[in-house]
Each structure stands twice: as C-alpha cells, then as structure tokens.
Image (cartoon, rainbow, N blue to C red; front, side, top):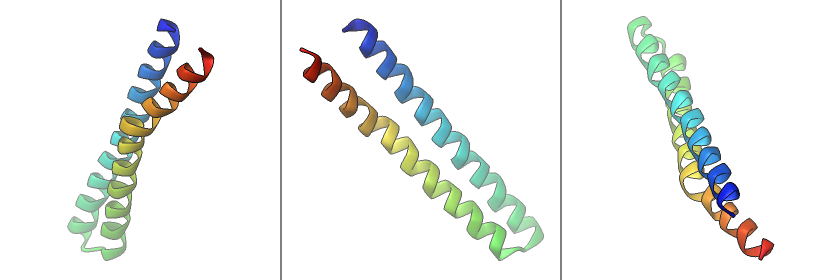
Length: 75
C-alpha cells in the first residue's frame, strides 16, 4: 500500500507541474501579445492560463481520489 501511495503522490505532483508549465507559457504568451499589441496572442495566453489552472486542480483533487479508489478496492 505504501508503494501505491508514493506512486499516486508523485503522479499528482507531476500533473500539477505540467499544469503549472502550461499556465506559465500562457503568461509568456500574454506578455508577448501585449508587447506586439496582438489580441489573438493575448487570448491564447488566457486560454493557456485557465487550462493550466484546471490541470493543476485535477492533479490536486482528482488524482488523490483515484488513488483512494484504487487502494480501497484492493483491500
């Protein structure tokens, strides 16, 4: 059980890191869009930020719940 909990913990951290990387690329896209005065690039940046935030929340909430489901059904 301890091994499964460690795997789930690392998977959660990896998913949250992936979401943070996408959100950070969105911040960079917004900055680029503002410097070039490109509304489409700014919109793309906001989309990436929101998508990254959703992935972070999934890593924070959904992955541990899946882990609890797996460990409870293994008993």
